[in-house]
Image 1 (tube, rainbow, N blue to C red):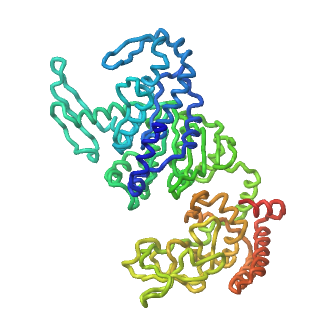
Image 2: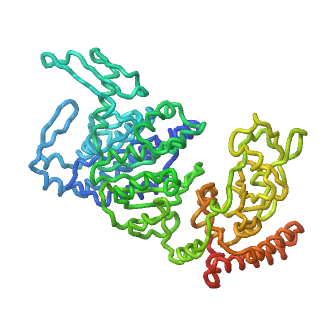
Image 3: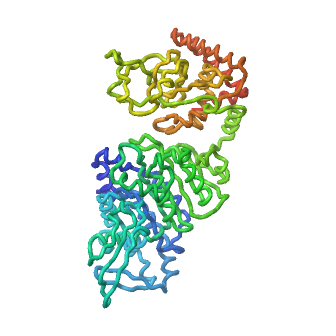
Length: 587
């Protein structure tokens, strides 16, 4: 093997895809780990904190911890002379096989002792997968096979269980030897809730080890916690069994809980004052409304050092992000902002307080900000002027391209529409037992004259449904417009270059992998308030675009679509040709 990390790579390759999904396991790219370690350790000085403690509380196969070991070894080596000098009078204990030796700092701080020091005092890891923890232990020991270590600080457990609080050990002694041990486990989801009176038993030793392990706090908590929605079918039983415990202890979103949220809460409480927390999480954390409370807590209670957005992962639909925090209340620090593929820049922390719903997002492009403000000026959000809904959720085995049975009805999926028009149908055996979720209200689903919006894609695709065809979950429906707005006016706005620019810059989710429009972001599309005469001009152009599309007259379609876009720019007060060209060319 070329490196100790290869064992972990082999393990991740051989475990089943379904197991990975249920446990939220996926490979973190090496450059992301390097980015995190560079930014969390840049202030670290072993001269000030030689017994630094670093942990990954969802360590998996140990990529973060192995890299952290390498980083610490390098830093300690660079400071070895300074350590010898500063701590030369200190007495240290070191084990050599079965012998415990006391030495002064001058002899302790030697290159040959660094492996022992880092493994025994600095590196910690925990994971629920017993095989993964064994692999981490092996990888760490392989760093120096000649050196004696004695122990590794790696535990197999559910890190979200508050072992330091829930496990209540009492040891009574008689003649310097224990007579019996009593322990209570407060949470019955861990084990049966009991008072246990026995001589030494395996469970006591195992739980007592976890109790001691989690009584610590740590200088650096790093990692990529599992991204697992506990409200979906792919959740693992081990997570589901503890869900009540998680909600009771960590609160937050009861209806749509995700493991990574609980890991953030756990990590925050185990980080020392002035310590660092650096996690890779779904980018949804930066802006989804269900995380407002947690983002607000972080903004008010912690110093945000780094935010890294739009990280894509192989085999994962959702884009990721990195946040790096320092545990102190520094209100007005500078934050490093990085977007995948773009240059890093800095902003003041207070600028995040002004973001909608305490969102962790910022656009350093002043031109973009001016355009955004112009778009929002005298506009209403779509949710303020209409009702939006998701189509029904069905079973794919009952969806047909052709009408194979009289019981089947026409439906629209996302594939059946393009800008402005619906061009084809699917057929579905639409019975109650075949409807799994989504909107079941036929009055909404069959609404004649509704606007359809495709959920996925790198641009907004909206069409007009004149027939009142039922829609499936890959489409949103827009109905019940206020009387002061027309459907074709809204259709023209949604399909315009301007609103698509706004979508790409401020509304899209998973931009770098599988771009999609979430319903709550659909509701945030700004529609310019204007009189019926102006709306009528848009309606006329929309009708002409629709007619030429149906006639397959490409040149005329392009001509009328160009006129439509010019009119939309004008309605939103954007008339500078340089700005218009910038919007059109901004990919």
